[in-house]
Length: 143
Image: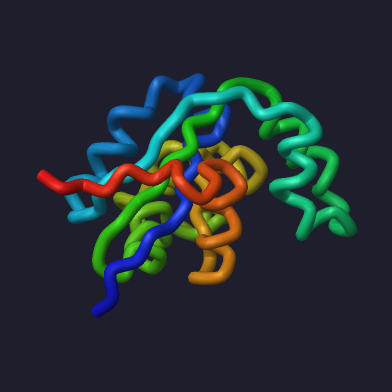
């Protein structure tokens, strides 16, 4: 197994539902460490830039509106196979397809408002982490 880092976002509906602590607890119980974290409100420009990969998709405008509708918590998770573990904990994008006990099965309202985001691979994780935390925004856990 490989120690990895991945980006996690608690989306506006998760923050509004006061799920920050519950979600962080699930990550930590699974052995993932938080090595960077901040709450912020994305500007339209930031949301467009972050989701640029979807700019030609029909849901792009709605996604940008949703992600700018309230504060988000962006964080970097680190641990053994962190990308796959984060995605397992989150559950399927569509909460109707998510396994019981996953974040999306327990808390998401719809495929559009699905509480959390997680990187889908190592290259994406590296790009997404740099987008929010630059090259020096990670705080190694030394104790």
